Amino acid sequence: MLIPRRFGAALALGLLIRTATLLLPGHDDVITWKIWSYAASRDVTAMYGIGGTPPTRGVVTWGDHRTTVDYPPFFLYEYAIVGRLYGALFPAYPDTLALLVAIKLPVLIASMGLTALLFVVVRRVSNSDEPAQWAALAYWLNPATIVGGEMLGYMDPLYFLPAIAGLVLAYFHRPWWAGVLVAIAVSTKPQGILIGPAFAFALWQAGGLAAIARAGLTFCGTLALVVLPFFTKGALPNMWLAFGSFDTRRDTMSAYAANVGWIINWGLRGWLGVPELGFPKAFLQYVPRPLSITRFRELGYPNPRPIGRAAVIAATAWAMWVARRSRDLGMTAAVGAFTIHVFFVLSTGMHEHHQVFEVPLLVLAAALRPGFRTLVVVVSGIVTLNINYIYGAGLGMGWNAPRMITGVDLSVLVAFVNVGVLVWFARRLAHEAAATEAA
Image (cartoon, rainbow, N blue to C red):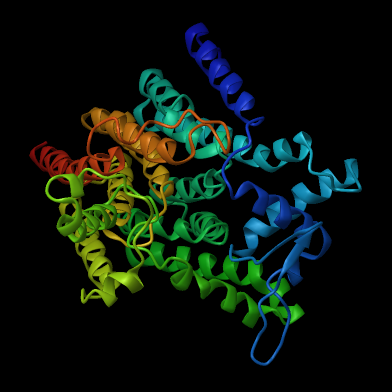
């Protein structure tokens, strides 16, 4: 296929920008990926620890660096490959610019693959080049996916690609391979499970219980194969121990995410500060850090975790019910994007970048249903700001949005806007579903 000149130039521009960001230092987890890549290249099955009564938590090292591991096995397999390739070129495994690029390079490859997937799928469904090109560029040139990917070293595109590919295969009546890909997504990063409601929705509409059963079989089988090397090494209990650290590690209402938890953090700090600072000054202060759930409960408030979970389940179930008569890929992707928006806004412990997963799904929905396109712009802006005012262009690089330029901390205003956008998204979803029924 001959690529139109402007489209090709835009793709080249995106490649230039994304490749250039590989040289930036990224956020503070990049050093963790370096340690893990080194350890994985030596003995990936020992990274969680092996044996012990009770099981011991594995500690991995690289030079003077020491840390633990809490990501699923498929991610470790991917970075074992990165580590071995880098180690073959640099046996001493030095901390060089080449290592930084090597660590970030899989993200660029995944982003390229997702861009191609969006183009091919939208072109096939719409039988038109315009929406396909729009989808590819809306992801590839999107500041949210650049900042939330190669630029800062977030690894999330590594699970975006198989998760969305699995969703697409479910829509196209390929449940066996769909189950494999979604299992790969989940075993790359736990947030891959958020594709679950849309995935089940697509399977049900494509083939009912039979399709769900087939996908479920390959999903479970793939997960079993992924963990098999750890099982044979006797490291499975250690792996479960590592995964069990998620709740304790996320003892926050919001880990800098623009959501309800961050608004509560701001509101509670302001309220408690009124006796000393007065009103409204107490609410016009910089929000210094996340509020722990432990401290929130010590102040006499209920545990927010089950409340958030119940709200997420209810909102997601509502979206699936509203869209039940819509059998097109655009609405299926919109249900997926809405699920992630709900989870990000209403759950506890969310980090600033967890909403990025919504962007490619919303792009897919908007390419096929233009009524969602304004939402793509607004959500992308929120995601970009939410990440930028924390990390800027990378550690030590600056270029952070000034948080107090708006009087009230900018992070709080963005959180309020994001909650409002969730309501707007719900109304838009209901409108699109009603339009389907009317047609």
